[in-house]
Image 1 (cartoon, rainbow, N blue to C red):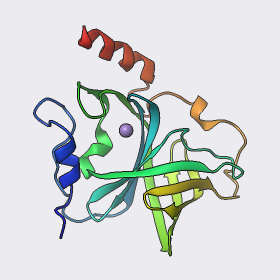
Image 2 (cartoon, rainbow, N blue to C red; image 1 turned 90 degrees about the vertical axis):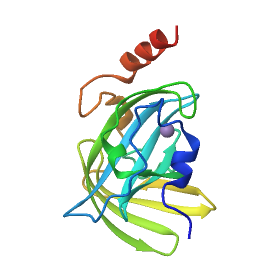
Image 3 (cartoon, rainbow, N blue to C red; image 1 turned 180 degrees about the horizontal axis):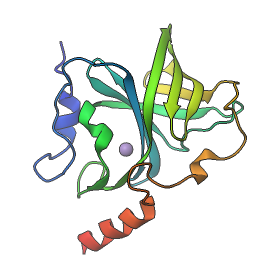
Length: 181
Ligand code: MN
């Protein structure tokens, strides 16, 4: 069996980066958590992460999530991240994923899995209600809002501050650029 988080630790230099160690959480106590991190890497994207079996299953969503059921947002599954990654906000130094990260949203979620799809009920600060993640090709998924009382045509990505520090990603990007000099 593949060692959990092997890909995670192989991709990065965890001595240089302040990103969390590749540690699997023992057993989920209480509710499952989710986090969405806004990440200014080579290309800006949102990392959508769901706690499952002691790790964070992760998808990179280039356009970010939408509250509009008419939108289908591509979500590319990437390597599992350690549970502690949920609290990571800051600068990833030169190397894999270099750039700035803010915690764009966080909360708890409920899961119902069916064949090739995850049905989610998110209880975040920005993302709320029913969503579906559907796998249509290896590692390629679509993230969609389902019709409910939270569905909206307003662009949720306009709410651009960290739900933890209230900082904007641009503030950290400026810090990253200063560090590079
Ligand atoms: Mn990322």
